[in-house]
Image (tube, rainbow, N blue to C red; front, top):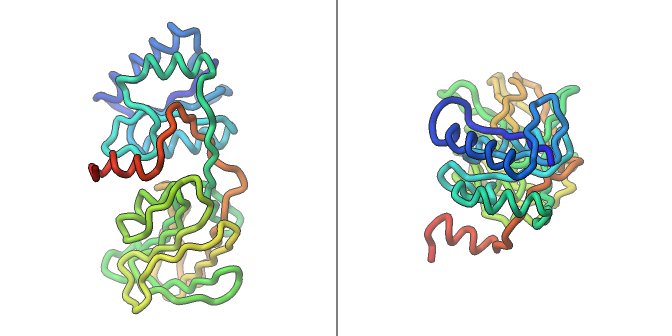
Length: 257
C-alpha cells in the first residue's frame, strides 16, 4: 500500500512522530511516495490545519485521508499518535471503512477551488467593514455590512463558523451554512441552506475583500467583484476506524460529560 504523508514542517513533535510513522509503514510493508507519486491513501500528521492540506491532496488524487491528531481539538483526525501501530495494522489489513463528506466549491472568474471546511470572504483593511450583496439561487437575499462572511459545510461547522456563532452540524448531513462575521445589521444569524443552493456574493462598496478556501487564499476582489459558492462536485473521503457519534465526539472534545 502506498502512502503520502502530509505533516507540519520544521522540528517538533510532528517531526518526531512522522519519523516513527515512516518506520512503522516500512515495517508493515507499505511504501511512502512523494508529491509526484500516486498514493492509495494520504496520511495527515498534525492539527486540523495540516489535515486540511492533506484533504486537498487526497481530493486531487481521489484517495481517502487518515488523520493523526497532533493539534488541540483535532475534529478532523481519526486517531491519536500513540495508536499509530494499531491503526497501521488495521489499515494494511483493510479493517476500516470510508466516510464521504460533502465539499464546498467557490468560483471567482475562471478559477474554482474546492475545500472540505469553508469559504471565507473577509475584509483586508482591518478598520473598514465590507459590504456584500448576497443572492441565494439567483434571488436577492440581503446586504451584509460585516468583517466577513463564511459559507461552511457541516464538517466545517466546528471550525471558523462555530467561533462566529454558527451551529454545530453532524458531518454526515449535507447543507451549506452562511454565517456573517461581526455583522453590523439587525439580521446577523447563521442561515442553513440545502446543499444544492448556489450562494452569490457581490462586493458592493469600494473596499477590497479576500477570498479563502480552507485557509488557502484564492485572491482579492474590489467593488463589483463576484463570488459563487456551491456544493463541491467531489466528496472528501475520510478513513474511519472506530464508530463515534457526533454528540459523543463533541462531548469528548469540549469536556461536556
